[in-house]
Image (cartoon, rainbow, N blue to C red):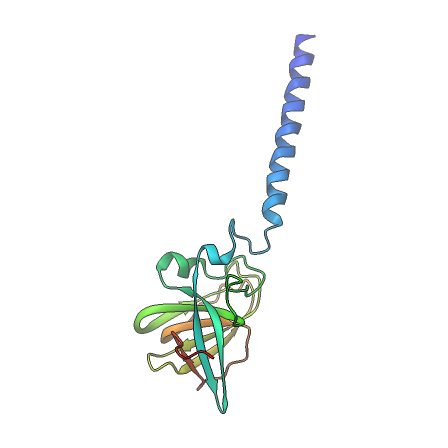
Length: 168
């Protein structure tokens, strides 16, 4: 009889533990960004000025300036985000800022959305663009001082000035 009671108690405890684990997993599943916190808890934001041909506009970007932020990037995110809700400018993506013009490699492992990756030189000119696919483990490398991950169709040759001054 004691064995039957012990087995019953063990089964009940296992079920309770399973319910708790599934509940915690469901809570994390409801977080649309895949992070424990919104993107603006990990990244600062700034304005950029985007010029292509006769068109110029300002947008807000998340800034990935240190290695930890650059490794995190848009990993597990399902959207570009809103750059913290505080911006009066549309969030256009995430800008990776490096110390100098150097070869920088990107991949899309654990990134759930397609992104256009733009390598930008120290003169703020887009020198290379790549349309990256979700979850790709292909590493794409090109020289640049900045890389902008966006969903906008910004062409090679466009100017993306960071930080933007004179926003109107």
